[in-house]
Length: 345
Image (cartoon, rainbow, N blue to C red; front, side, top):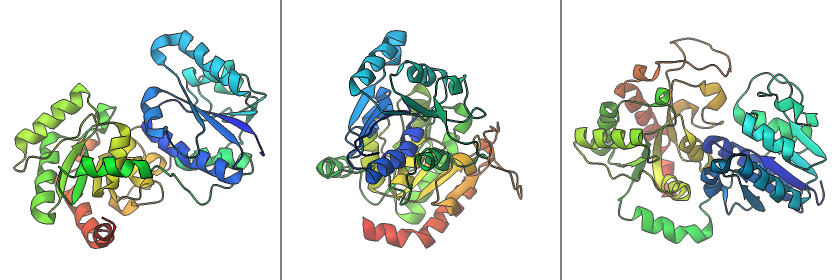
């Protein structure tokens, strides 16, 4: 791989972008002279920009449609890639992979390649049983003879961000608990009255300062208003802050409580204990990777069920999560993780 110029196609989804970080970190660790170029949409690009293993980000603007894809093709052509790694199997990624000039295009095996993705790659990784998304991406490293160990995200905060972090968290108070209250799919969400009850318990039982976090969609803003109106202790809100600021917030937190969404994986990458509220997606496939499994609130499985790793969704599960379920995980966090979190902060 000496001197090799590598393109990465993984354009969307914050959580998936976080999962790709150990891949690019391993590639750069294996061969520091390689050049890594990553095609990303603007949202996840704002999270990745500045990462020490990523030499160039090529932004794909979906609003420009096919013209946006041609813009990406021209930018990739200027890179003279030796290898393109297609980690995303949906139609837009497949089209960009097809358009990209590269002699080798490595993708998923035919069974896992959706939207005819296998037709646009020149080589494919071997078939594999379903496993965690992070391990699935590591299959590409294995195909290239690159070790994934040690698993390193290097998400930050970077040295130049420390002053900004201090300015961000100083008005909020300490010790912080970040509550990620919004997700991209309604089936992943939890009711505001239960969030409010958890908020109050964090203040009254554990002396934490809960901070609401997430995006700025209408649903998230509605949830924010409902939580604030129901809570005895009004939580500060950071909804809509940039992804890099969210990194800074999570890094400064002793505890994160998150729905099944990108910030959950950001917390894992930053080694911050995270209580994961899972119901719609399979935790064995998209839950926290190798860390904090003892803090998962699993509404995906039925009591005592030994379900396999799968892509299957389960609907109507999140209402099963009771406030007491979350409080019991927080109690476990306090007994198991809090002392280390206090030393770190």
